[in-house]
Length: 304
Image (cartoon, rainbow, N blue to C red; front, side, top):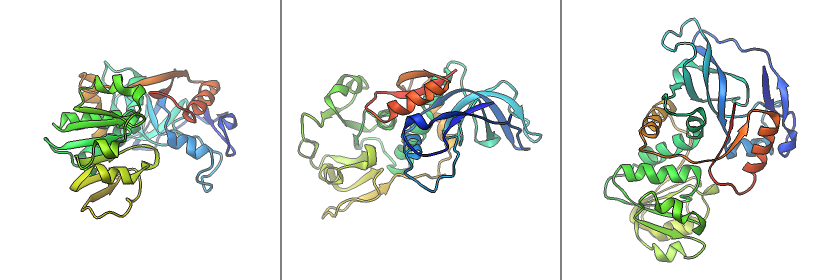
């Protein structure tokens, strides 16, 4: 079977098709035939050599949806041909081997692309809202980076919990975000959020790339507010702030998060946006990596 990866670090052109042996599951594993994979920014950082200790050659990818084609001897509850999703490793391949207790069945009314597009951003958003921020009904929640894949889901999940949500993004995303029924939208390229939203937020959620501009987060926060960010720390402040840095956690399992997200998506209580569909070919993966490196709207999904 074919997989798509690289033997050296560099730009999108380093990707190549790599022949791999057919996969065989251990007792508690299953093998899926890939239908769709979602591309994430972490994939781009990896092939750029951000972590030089990454072993090569590498088949990257974490978000996969496929049909079960083989099951291990101890797996009795996942029938062959079931469509499943998983947050795993080495997903850029025609077949992926996963632990049976990590997969989630994909509802019949979701396409493989829709399900795949929700995996990493959805898990991140769900854990951010429910665990790191612990959003409560009636709170004012300010979401910075609201137009991104994670941010748009954070907005919707916080709204479902009864929060008053204020979204910050560029003006070009105003219509898309206000359509979600926001309490307020602030375009950072037209207004200064630190001034417009000074001391407004009970919870500030910063899911911009690298959690930039912690000073603005502090300015928008009430005294004793919670600030949750992908950044590792905040600037010094005289405010009493409860700070949480978003990181991998199993306090809520990926599987539990995905089960809830798929339920919401399949019943039209949540939306995900796919900006680009690409073919499951070397050209598709190469183009996808190039798109990741630039400005793009919505998720980038490779599908058969």
